[in-house]
Image (cartoon, rainbow, N blue to C red; front, side):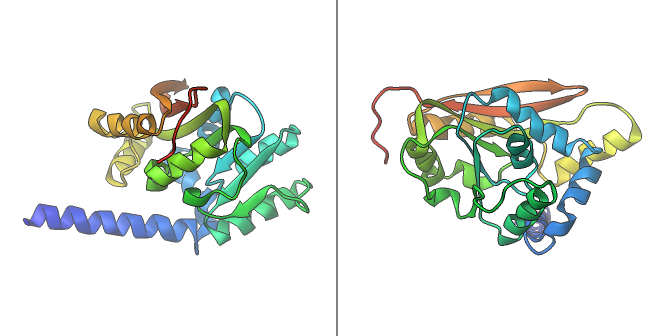
Length: 230
């Protein structure tokens, strides 16, 4: 292994450690960091997933600070959320409490995507925004199939291509690249489609414009044909 390969491996480990800390012990800094690296657009990008949600109940996997939860609860929609981070669970519940939304019987819970604690055919839509590798795990995909109703849909906001040519925007594009947050190559995108299709979904990718930015979505529909999970 040459020096460049060693450096890339070390850098990947370092970036992954940073994001893990940011999502757990340093979760109180999450919104602040996300705003800096997105030019203040992070929440706007997350909210664009609404354009692909087809019905209720909704399950958000990896709800993070709870911005999407807040929006749907304020609009009296039926939404549930699951996140593996106890720090994010506390952060999101506090957010909803501050907004005087009912958290006594909160639909938020802690858990992992590979073992969803919900009954079969419970949801019309599953949404994930900027997920990590758990969204590509075959167990996660199988569980999403199980809890979705017939004709249900998975909506994944996978990545963003940041637009504009100012110095700040060029810096953000560079930052997205070195932290592996920019859209991957066509082979990687095809891998996502392949994994979801292998579990029975009709999957596709779609670019969505948000001002100068372009958001990359993976959309996976559960058709009504019989499917044996495995």
